[in-house]
Amino acid sequence: MAVSIKGNVIVGQSGGPTAVINSSLAGVYKTAIDRGANKVYGMLHGVQGLLEERVVDMSEHIKSDLDIDLLKRTPSSFLGSCRYKLPDIKDGTELYDKIFRILDKLEIEYFFYIGGNDSMDTIKKLSDYALLNGSQIRFMGVPKTIDNDLAVTDHTPGFGSAAKYIASITKEVIRDGLVYDQESVTLLEIMGRNAGWLTGAAALATGEDCEGPDMLFLPEITFDVEHFMKKVTDLQKVKKSVVVAISEGVKVADGRYVCELTDNIDYVDAFGHKQLTGTSRYLAGRISREMGCKTRAIEFNSLQRCASHIVGRVDITEAFQVGGAAVKAAFEGETGKMIILKRVSDDPYLCVTDIYDVHKIANVEKVVPREWINEAGDYVTQDFVNYVRPLIQAELTPIMVDGLPRHLRLEDA
Image 1 (spheres, one colour):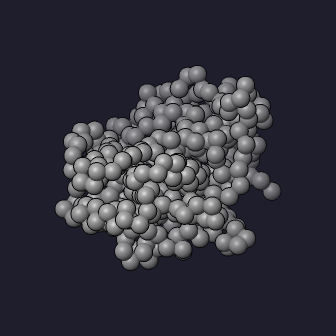
Image 2 (image 1 turned 135 degrees about the vertical axis):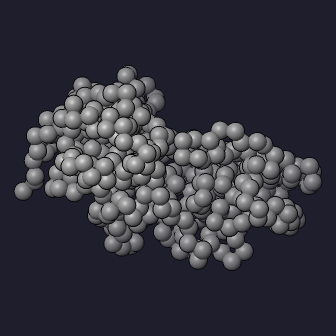
Image 3 (image 1 turned 120 degrees about the vertical axis):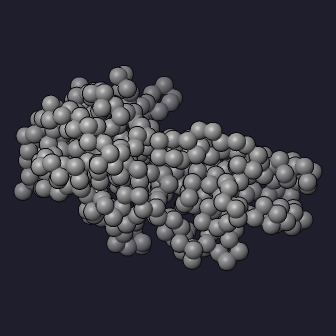
């Protein structure tokens, strides 16, 4: 029998958005309402907005099953996001007191945060503070990140759709490169600061109708610029169009990002993360100058995390499920936990939800295993491909209006 409640719920979204993050929001909202929650509040721009008491009553913006379907298909963060780092509890007592006063004022009993590694750090700290101060509010993390770098969980909602987009665009770029009878090198710059899951996904472009990218460079392997130049030179001797996928986060031996070899990076977010861009442009410039051939630098940038027109059905379904599972777990008494996905089988693909202590997930980064990268360090293995391929299966067609996808918009955000 489903556990029902009468208290209030609050949910927020944090960090970089994905094509399916709102499906998790829909899962939280619908499950909470179905189980009897009095009100479901949404934080505008995460915990940073909460500190300013910027919240909305979700029921005023989601009024029908059609709205739920639209929300699931809407990319980016419906409630808005933030990159706000909570201080250690001992250094931020006044701030934590303020957060809990606001939550008490709203009569919140259940707090859900949809996000990645840094967001799970927020859940960890808030649940610890509640425990220390006798608060009965339950805190649950809902996994999200295209980077797929959250520990413990088999994969993260958002990654599958980003991988599907990357592999699809890689195929199209490869076709485009064969149009003219001249030598060219195309560099695809893909997101991934320290983990190469997204860049590795470009390998899925390989198939009967496509030879796939020629090389893949992940941040797990130290990048040697001179060795890279030699490999490109050797490839150009045997084929006219060379396509290389490279992570924005690749580093040279001294620890610098490749993009830092030419450009100064001034912007650093609240978590100390440098804004990475320019890797492909730097390498394309070197190739053009030293090899004298046509080059293209293509930065996928935010496109890989907002392409809801090519969202994976597996991904959007699992995103909804983890949102619902978080509500179920919290209503049954869990706190300080995150929902994880556990793979039962590859063929047929089957994944189930479970719960895990957020203290063992927050601030732990999952990178691509070395054995899933080839010995030369310039491609992924078949095991990597077998791991990712089930996650990109099937499609969920957008709800089209006047020839374009219709999204659900929150005017207040």
